[in-house]
Image (cartoon, rainbow, N blue to C red; front, side, top):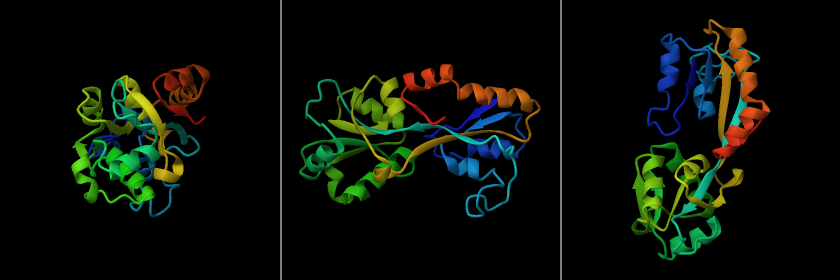
Amino acid sequence: MLLVENMENKDISALKKQIEAGADCDVFLSAAPKQMNQLDKAASAEGNPDGLDFVLQGTRLDLLENKVALVVPEGNPKDVRSFDDLIAKLQNGEVLLAIGNGDVPVGQYTQKIFTYYGVDEAACASSLTYGSNVKEVTAQVSEGAVDCGIVYATDAFSAKLTVVDTATKEMCGQVIYPAAVLKVSRHPDAAKAFLEYLTGADAKKVFESVGFSPLQ
């Protein structure tokens, strides 16, 4: 069984808890290193304070990177061209921007972008709308209810939105998806083979086709 962490679940430790509780699982693909670290005895004490030991050593890898993307509705009515352009227009009150709430990852990445640019989120409140998850943000952009939004590249692909810019590592860090075989796997050889398949050319084509950047 493959368990895949949902990046926009407010309780993104849900699958970690299932693994701890003895879920029948062979491969864990997490949408953030945090939950993988909490299960990996090779992680730092800070990353794994409980000393949990569920990851089969030698199998963990950073499989994919997602990107934080600036998207616009059809026709790009406010001619938003980049994050630099967005910030200037946002601070001048020229655009309405949809972002995630601060308690979900896409909103937290957006807050890092604001910090990078020295933006006071509260001061721009009249130019911001919020979504409780990334799907709500993409919906606002798709419907033309806002002038632009900040989502993941994969969600932009799914919603067929135009991406005008992607955030750099310096702006908000990286959105890394690690994967590993678990020690509780009853089929470790098959799990290793499947993980190897996920790093192969065929899988890479699929990942790239939906907006991911393979790291292997």
